[in-house]
Amino acid sequence: MSNHISNPNPVAQRSMLPYIITAVFLLFGCYIGFMVYGAMQSDVNLVSKEYYAEELAYGKRMEQVAQAQQLENPITIISAAAAEQLVIQFPAELTAATGSIHLFRPSDAKLDVVLPLTLNAEGVQHINTASLKKGLWRVQLTGKVNGKEYYHAQDITL
Image 1 (cartoon, rainbow, N blue to C red):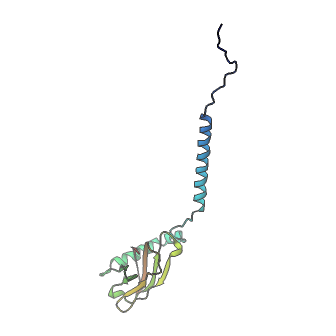
Image 2: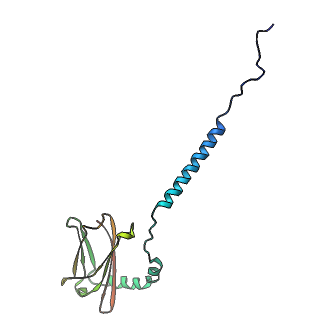
Image 3: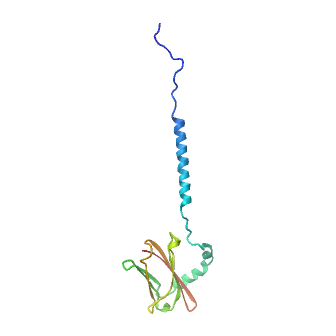
């Protein structure tokens, strides 16, 4: 006779695979939900509020750029970081120019600054940059003299 007693109800070994698959799907769903929430909370800035209106005026802007490029002495913009100043130099023939200076911050439209173009007798204007946030700025100059309009843009880093 055998002393071996067989168990009529053996304990089945459970697989962890369904639990792992379910956990992976739940974690993936939570990750996607977190990413969607983060995307909805971020501030989206277009390059310009009046993007389409500016696009329509593109032809006129190209004429202004061509006028500025035909100047014997170019319009120059110099960033003097140590003095916290921006120096704008117009050629001698444009010292009577009127217009505007747009300090454009590509990353945040709320920081944009528009100033009047007020050149001294030498055709120079100094702008204090101490209050401007450090980083990339695009300086856009628009000037008008004797019915001719001029446009010059330059990127600077403060």
